[in-house]
Image (tube, rainbow, N blue to C red):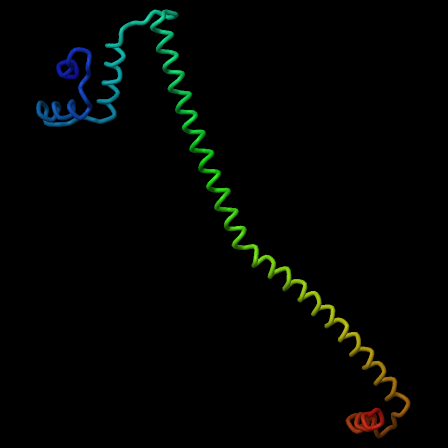
Length: 159
């Protein structure tokens, strides 16, 4: 069918082959198979080139240039993609920088408060020891049985 539709050395399009198959056989056929057969027919119609001839070298050079152009296009796309990605990440970093600065300030404030808390706890422990030391000699049997009264007495004497 493909050979019937071929005009000179120009092969028919895959869609034309599928339409002709549908008209003649009632089924279009598989797309992959039709294009595989078209590619094989293209190779068959291509004239035999003697290796090392000017025509072979010219074709090889053209193929190499085409591959090089595709590689350059891929490389440019790759570079562009990663440049955009780096730029996007830089912008995100700039947007997050104030939060990082605030986090550092908060951490420093937290450390200061923690230090002040430790100092206050230490002062409270020292005062508790002094209070116990003050209460110890003046304790009587009464104050042991009624610690609130003894504490009230200490408060009046220390004020």
